[in-house]
Length: 300
Image (cartoon, rainbow, N blue to C red):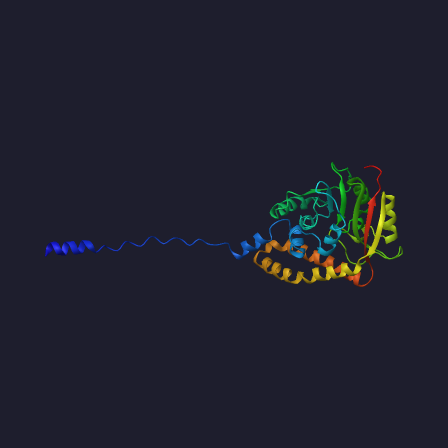
C-alpha cells in the first residue's frame, strides 16, 4: 500500500509557480503621436497640412495634366517644374510625362523634404529636385526642353525669373506660366497678402500686355494668352474648404502638445493668404492668365 501511494503521489505533479508578471510596455502617449504627425519645419508642415503632402501651394491637378499634355518629348529629354515645393508637383506631373522631370524651387528648406517625398513615392528614377537662387542667376549644366510653373513666379520676381528661364530652357523650348494680373496699369495693388512670405507691395503686379511684352524682351515668342480666372476660383474654393477639418485636427494636436503652436500659426497664415487670393478673384480685383511662350533659337 505504501508503494502504491508513493507511485500515485509521484504521478500527480505539483503546480508550477506562476511566472513573474511582466511590466506592461507603455505605448506612445497622445502627445507623442501628435508630435510625430506634425514634426518638421513648422512652415513646411503647416503647408502640408493645408494643401497635402509634397505641396506648398494649393494643387490644380487639371492644370498640371493639361500643361503636361502640351509637351511631346522623348525619354531622353527634360521638362522642368518651377515651384517644385516639397516634391508633390514633380511626382504628380511625372506620371503624365515620358521624359525626365526636374523640379526647381527657390525655398531652400524644401529640397530635403522633396527628395524624401520623391524617394517614398518611388519616383527617383525619372525625377529630381534642386534649389535655385533667383538673385544670382547661373545657367544649368543641362538645359530643359520645356518648363511649367505651378505657382505664380513672375509676380514674385519677374525680371529675375525671366533671366533664369532664358538660361534654363533650350532654344525652341516651351514655357507655361499662370499668373495673377491686373486689368489695367492704374489699378491698385490687391488688398490682403497674396503670398505668405512676401508683401504685396514687393510683388510685380502687371497687366497681361505688360507680361507679354516682358516675355518678348526676355527672348520668348508668346504663343497664347488665356484668361483662367474661373478655373483658379474653383480650385481655390475647393482648397480652402478642405482646410476646416485639417485645422480641427491640428488644433486638437496643439492642445495635446503646445510646442506645435508655431505650426498652427503658419497654418493660419497659409489659409489667410489663400482666402485673400480668393477674395481678390471673386471681387474682380485680379484676374488670372495663362501664358504659353517659346524661347527663340538663339543661344541654344
